[in-house]
Every structure is written in C-alpha cells, then in structure tokens.
Amino acid sequence: MKQDSTLVNFEQLFKQIAPEDINDNVFTLVGKDFYVVTAGKANDYNSMVASGGGMGMTVTKPHTWCIFPTNRYTLELIQKEHRYTLSYFPDEYKKQMLFLGSKSGRTSDKMNEVELTSVQTPSGNIAFREARLIIECKLTQISDANFDDFYSPEAKNYLREPYQDPGEHRKYVFGEITHVWVKR
Ligand SMILES: Cc1cc2nc3c(=O)[nH]c(=O)nc-3n(C[C@H](O)[C@H](O)[C@H](O)COP(=O)(O)O)c2cc1C
Image (tube, rainbow, N blue to C red; front, side, top):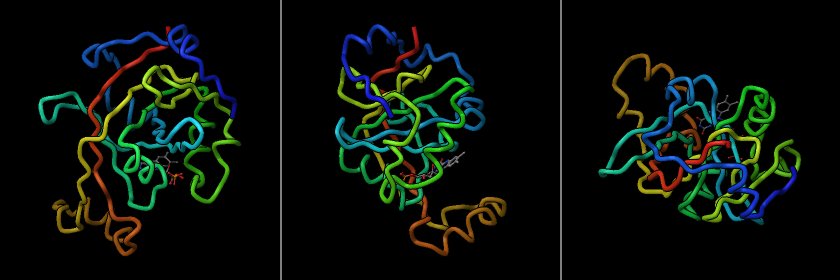
C-alpha cells in the first residue's frame, strides 16, 4: 500500500458533490460493484470489502447503511472512531477490493499488502486515490439483529447457520453522509 495523504492532492483529485447528485444505481453500486469500508486513523486504519447495505433517509438526514457480522475488525474501528468512509472503484480494481475481503486486518498486515493508495480527506478520514466515488460517514446508529427479527423463510434459511456463531450475528450500521466526493 502506498500513502498519498496531502490535502492539496485530495482536492485536486476529487470534487465534492451533494448526496442528491450521486448518479449511480444503488443496487449496482452496492450489490454488483461492491465497495470498501475504511475506518481508523491515518497511522492505524483498516478496510474491508462489502456487498450489503444501501442508502436513504433516516433521522431526517441522508445516510448509508452497512451490515456487519460482529467479528469484523473494521466494525470495531467504526465503533471506536465514529467516522468511516465508503469507497467505490472502477471495475479494474476488483482484485484489490476482493483482497480486502480475503482476511481480517486484526490478524494480518493486509493494509500494507494491498495494491491501493490511501488518501486522507480534508476531514481526516482515510479513503483511496483509485476510487471513483467516496462517501464519508458519521456513525449515528448500530442496531443488533436477532435471529427472530428476520421473518421471511428465505432470510431465516440464509442466516440460520451463521447465527450458530455469536461472531456472525449481524449489526446494522447507519452513518450520516457528511461528504460525497467524485473523481475529477
Ligand atoms: C464480495 C464480498 C462481499 C462482502 N460483503 C460483506 C458485507 O457486506 N459485510 C461484511 O461484514 N463483510 C462482507 N464481506 C466479508 C469481509 O470483507 C471480510 O470478512 C473481511 O476480511 C473483514 O475484514 P476485517 O476483519 O479486517 O474488517 C464480503 C466479502 C466479499 C469477498
């Protein structure tokens, strides 16, 4: 991993837009293209790839939401810092994104191994130079989902086995969108 953390570089590379001006289809953006969640400080951060979640309104503000099993190291850092970024990449970076989903940063050095360049946003959050869209979030809500909270047979079938392991119990994480950046 390379580091490219000057403010000048960031604003030369990315332009701020409003949440309403995100043009992507959310189902493609999240479920097909996937995205990278990053939390932590410049000298100690962690990223993982995600393919669940979405975007919308809650407590009157534009939000993103992500789904994490409780054992994710990235979730631990979100709970510590209350800030995180979602980075969306062009297709050519799929390999690097999947690498961030191949092992946990708690037990590996994946952030030093990944072939991506970290950048610091003007707010001090960490994202990636290669991203085409970056969403910065402020943690507003984490909700536990018990197995009984799922109603459809399909959801129950999908989750029955993971819920045997407490580390796999799902948390729904809502973050207020504080900034949206697109590649210039
Ligand atoms: C394509 C793909 C999608 C994934 N989607 C999610 C997701 O939505 N939520 C999640 O918690 N983990 C998801 N994962 C798994 C995490 O990326 C993976 O467990 C990662 O190693 C966690 O890293 P961490 O412990 O360093 O945070 C996905 C993995 C892949 C390969």
